[in-house]
Length: 179
Length: 176
Image 1: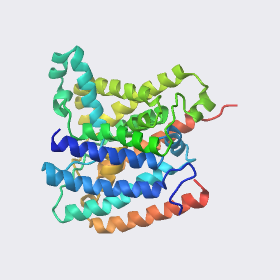
Image 2: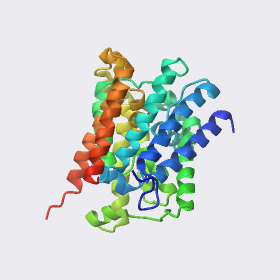
Image 3: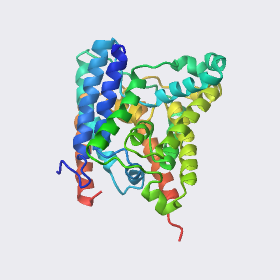
């Protein structure tokens, strides 16, 4: 097994196993230092961030919303975790020179053309559908896919199968060549 | 900054760093996995799950941590999981990787993030409707696989480990 990949990255087995160790340390650290076991996740932060944005125009509306009240619009441990992901990826990509300014991904361009507007529109629409789904299912590939699976949660197993099953189906329909 | 925020930030920086090093933040890796052509993210995720599982099961068995199962709400998981899967394929990112992708210069992930923020706001508006429909259908509660099957987690972990390693060797043989 190679520890380095052709593009200067690390083997996904190595990087993935290290995230496994990080997950264990993180669960232990949050329990010891914060008094509450917290698992790696990301999608709840999108709810809080949406709440913050909405608060700037309609604070009463956010305060009266049942879901925002349940998830609590505040900067918490996970919010900072998600911000940290941005910083960590920036540090890693700048230091190994894999940082690349990209407006349309190559395989998208090959199939759907170079239009940034087209890519932006679909990314936005896909984002809406995906986040409604993630909040309904109670998590995303971090919360369900990684954290839930390592706890052997039945719900996460179902979510994992649905994420990949429907994702594989959709990708095959989208990228199928009709010619 | 208090302890919780600082701890979250440090954990997130390491998480983002490792995802970037594993090259799992790229659009083409996400879509590549869903097209069954490039299994990088599957290798990464299963490695994380396998290592994490051993530690989490040990720590919870020793009573040091508590498990935080999410509710086994069947309607929510089937419909929500399907919606997520479809949206994931279209945008080419998941919530965590979209943030990391912006960090490595993939500017277009910002549109996906904007869409996800809009999706979260829409979900908050539609929440009362969902609680009385799809979320109210069938909830089995917060259950783990060992209790559901009535066996020790230490029977499941080795089976999962063997299955994962066999899958990895198959990926490597096929050059995926």
